[in-house]
Length: 278
Ligand SMILES: C[S@@+](CC[C@H](N)C(=O)[O-])C[C@H]1O[C@@H](n2cnc3c(N)ncnc32)[C@H](O)[C@@H]1O
Image (cartoon, rainbow, N blue to C red):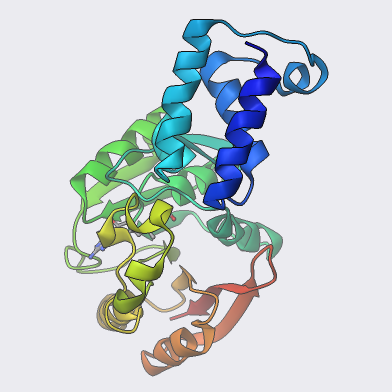
């Protein structure tokens, strides 16, 4: 069968499902699953694939039609300059989150000791350590499965020797915060909104990675409440936020005594992260 016929058929199905980038996804699946380069896909119009290749592709197309995201199908994700393993226990890293790293680099903020809360796949810390070669990071998560994946990813990306892993509920296992910067992309979806998220998210990202309590802000309150008790002077705090949460999170940061609060936008020009200082 001609590859182009397979593409056309599935493109129609993906469009009917309302996927955002159907052709891009199909090309990625073909590249990942049967190794045909994008160049060959585009320019070798008469390319024929054999029956076993068709079957392999069909299996993936079917999974995608059930709205399983590609990161969960292929068990990997790309985040800035790193490749990460993901599985059903981990939140799939998003391009929105990359801005946290860019903000620190662009603002020329220097630090050595990082504490990252809710690390998931380890995306933020691994990516930061790739850039800040003298830094080290203590990463936490409440999910031991996530910690396992974060460590696996750190080993794969050669940052494991500068990372330490703790499974705990936010700051409950710390009695001081001897770090230069605390970073977190906590769960921030309002509980009542979770059911309205797209299936790719509400079925395939762990609930614990999404659920921000009744107003989406529970994790910020909990973390900042602990920082107020054990945070040292000048500790930087950088959070990812929902695009409509900047004012509320800034209020909570103020309430808990943080200063020099700044909000930064993401690549879609939406408020996406907030920085403050204890
Ligand atoms: C939105 S995900 C972010 C994952 C990763 N940092 C990223 O940006 O891709 C939130 C993470 O916080 C973790 N988490 C949720 N509740 C937590 C808690 N009480 N203490 C520590 N981590 C928690 C989840 O398991 C999840 O890995």
